[in-house]
Length: 353
Image 1 (cartoon, rainbow, N blue to C red):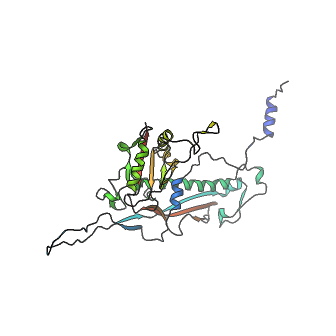
Image 2 (spheres, rainbow, N blue to C red):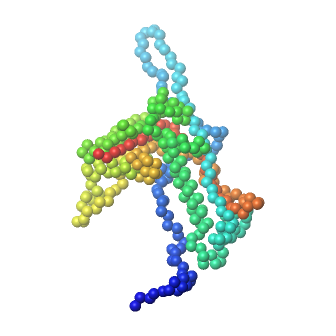
Image 3 (cartoon, rainbow, N blue to C red):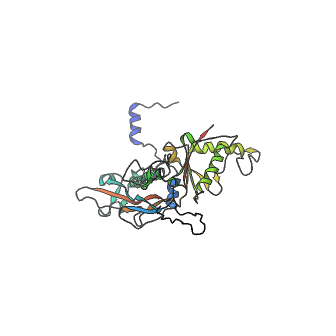
């Protein structure tokens, strides 16, 4: 027999029961890998300070040359003047959170010392009775992940979105390397101050039969090494990897042991890589930016982050205002990204046939 409850009985049940919550953990839904940021931080170089810029000298043209002569023929002497100077401004970045004392009280959190604010808190003894997840922990996590996401976006930037942040990878490795002034040096008149690019009308369409994309990349690596570049970081979008996968799976095998393994089909595949260059890293940020069909070949010796010494991810806990019960926490980063050699990098766009 099925029990039938009256409206008043259902209301009584609702008043005395709670929904079941999975406590203590917030299941994050949109975290992504950030290989560009990871590798740039790995290869960073610190600097001590300076007025406004990081500067350096570069040279791509040479004047002096041999000339033939006989006997007492007059010869010529050159006066070389080919050194140019690049400059990149360093920038200051800030990320911070604030929370009111009222919010903390509702979450069962006590601020022990107003001067140290969020650095000195403790849970109330009966907090577990009403708190589903830790409010303060979530806000601090938001600060960590949010600042990392925005820093990653800046690293991939082209320098046009905000003049108060440093220019990123796409400012140096551009689709149109024959135009524009980068670091104060005109690319139109200095061919050695240009990255490699096969995009747009020059993009490469993969071919299972002709291995067009694989061959083009091998040819490009030779050009990137032409002037002693050593690209060792490859960052790709998903569509580019699919185009490469189309060629590799046609001519190669899925696993080291072969396509068939122990009587069953294993469709897994090892990471793609190029001998002497490195692994093709999938960077989801390229998909987010609309560049899923691109790959960036980078020489980290010549394109790198330069944080100011002692000013990298510096934590701050500002005192609360005397007339407001609001608590703050922040982190600052000071520095820039520089490139002292352009022709060691390239950007390549791929399409599937």
